[in-house]
Length: 313
Image (cartoon, rainbow, N blue to C red; front, side, top):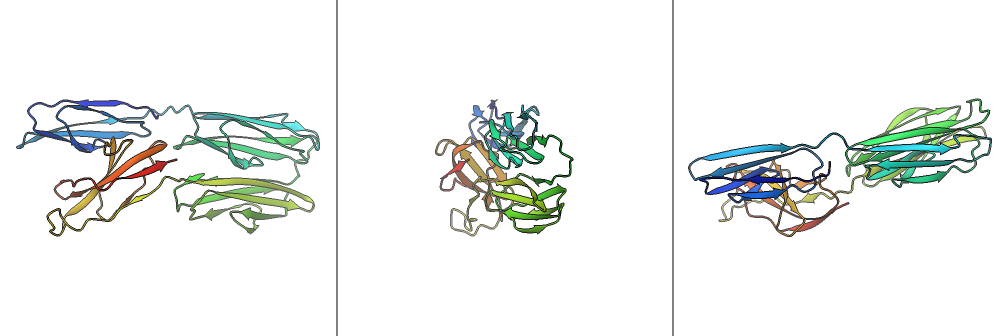
């Protein structure tokens, strides 16, 4: 995952060639193409013609399932005396970002430590890390020596943890030993002792906290939902052909990207003339030049639109 490959094609007897899938656009009779970093399976096609007939060849570049994504959370010690403290430590491999749950709530580095402070009741901690396509978690409870298990505790989680701009997530929680629970942060108000709630639509990353109590005892848990900040590129549908006549057979678009101006290394086909936006979430972090072409019902493709730059976080 994230590796690159080089495609190569040759033709004989052809006058021109063009690509399909991630190889979209006009292509030379013989050539190579650098895929860039590949995060998901990609389909490529090359078609060549002598003016009277055409031939094609296609292939799929697949991404292996072994990602190497992992996270490990430990505490030393994991059982403490009343009012004692512990140090949590976590390490991850193959991750792009991590966040905590329970008493470890909020954004966290890929590898780090956390001082529990003085612990008066059992506390639950969770760390989750993601590579952008999947996530792994580890969790533990720091126990107070001699605890009867009746102290107030609460767990809070979100699914999914990452959403697109405008997306929603479901918060799920449970508590023990509590008589009431109150939400704060990205939500508010009294909550049942256990349950679930939908939050969204979300336009920014948001943290949620739930505090449960029984008399003088209380416990809290936190979680967060990250909003993907990949920009959405929008454009206006064309209404005329290059000769000024009305465009009546618009079939879709092709969205192009590359690291150099007017030198595009990838593309995506959009098969709806009314869908005038694209979010290039499959791209790796960096700055890209992007442009769009229009495609009619016969498969004819327009010249590139004006070019803009987009930054992928």
